[in-house]
Image 1 (cartoon, chains in turn green, red):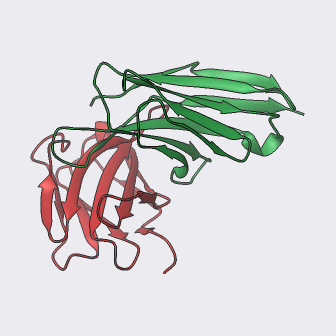
Image 2 (cartoon, rainbow over the protein chains, first blue to last red):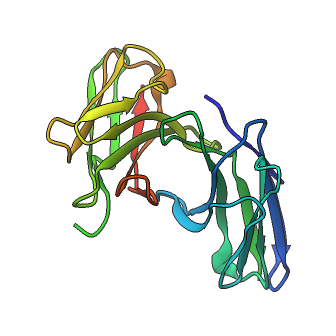
Length: 112
Length: 112
C-alpha cells in the first residue's frame, strides 16, 4: 500500500538535544497528523495540522504544515528519555473518502 | 470503555485457517478504520466504515479479507485461508465523524 516518505529512518540522540524529522509526499493533503507509537501499543496523536503553512506547538513539540501541502515537519526540543519511540506522520487524502496515509516512521532513541 | 479495545491481543494460527479479529470503538464514534502494520512499517489502510456501511474498502488486499460492522459499533475483520504473509499487527481506530482518530492497541496475528 501507499506510504509517505519519512526521514530520517532512525535517530540516536543525547538527552537534551533537539530533534527534527520530516515527511514528504507526491500527493497533496488537506490535513497532516503526527503520531507516536510505543511498543505493543497503537499510535497516539501528538499534533494535527489543518492549513498550509500552519505552525502548531504542543509542549516541546512543534509541527509545520508545508506550504506546498506535500510535506510536514516535526521538531522535538530538549529531548528526554520518554521521547523514545516511533514517530509517524499521516496525511488525509483529498480523494473524497476520509482515509489517512501513514509514513514509514522515524525511530527515535534517546541516550541519557 | 474509555478507549478503543481490540481482541484478542495475540492470535497464532496455522496457514489456511480462518480468523476473526474484533474491534470495540469508543462509544458514540461513527467512523471506524482498520489498518495493517507490518514489522518496521507504518499502518496501512484497509477499510473505513461510516456507521454500518463500508465507505472505502480499497485497502483490502484481496477477497480473503472482509470486515463487517452490523450495528454501527463493534466491527469484525475476517480473514479466510490465512497465509504466512498475513502476519502483522492489525490496528483499529475510531473517530467521531471526520475528527481525530483514536487507535486501539492492535491484534498481533501470526500465521505459522
